[in-house]
Image (cartoon, rainbow, N blue to C red):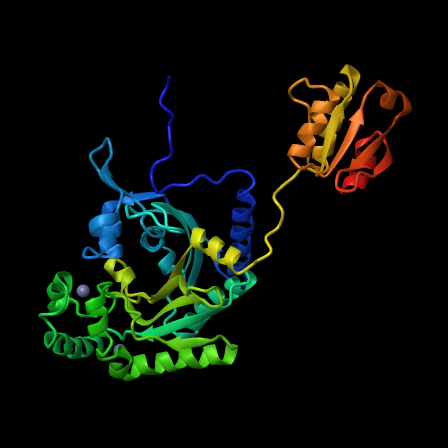
Length: 419
Ligand SMILES: [Zn+2]
Ligand SMILES: [Zn+2]
């Protein structure tokens, strides 16, 4: 016997009966992005590895441990995208979009690939909705992006709070880093090995270390918001003021850091509230140094990414009313050869005028065709045979109620009843 083929670990199938959740959420995200003036951007699923080495950061876990990287048949190093931003920036530059005026606002819905331990809502292939805004350095862009996230979470019945922080800019960060080093040096012996290594190079990353000991030590570490330069301070005040004006709940969380050089100023995470265990739904921030990192001109940037698997899980947990799965408007059941011929023609005509329908494709009897209609949860059925053809009339059965509605046997008349 042949060995059964199974899907690779960390991947998932979306099958009929579930896929409508995805359509619904994706459409809702697109509509929300449009409300804010963001247009969709599609970039390849794979890029030259360099795009991510430079765009995600050589020292990150993502680049060092989690990327799906391989040599193609032309010996080029290729990587399946582990996140959505770097490819977007590459495309932004390659297509000369940066020269066409600011701001540039786009969104994407894309699969992303990371070789990591699969967990609920976090697969090796998962899907991300993300938004990027380039060329806007005002705090208005920050509050706009944050309010976009708040809006779609609300549409999915998810109550949320945004945790925000400012991690400064290349002007004020060195000063803050010095304070951090001073603080952590005093605890150097207790830190985990990785953190001891990054103490001198990148002390901010100790703050988001997952080791409980490092976490405990980091609790009393200096806060970046206490060391902001005037520009960063005013920017952060602006963000907070706008959120207050819009009525979006926020709290300041000094533990949200992005330890890479091109992240600047605002960083944020959305937490679903009222869901029992609090969980991060999505995160983002400002990365005014990223476009330069990928070889472009100095360009402000801000964005976020949100995992769709986790988002759907969160919306379900929040009790969101999802729509019913897709089902056809009507099944044309044929009682005999003449009925089958008429059904083929009628179905074609109905489809031209926007009525979804099915006919028998398996040469089955009336009973089996009705059973099929039940199984696929068709909204209506109509039996067509020689008698109906002679009379020019048939009965449309409303499946939910069992009620029969007499109807003339032409597409327009049937459409009127089932639509
Ligand atoms: Zn600054
Ligand atoms: Zn550590």
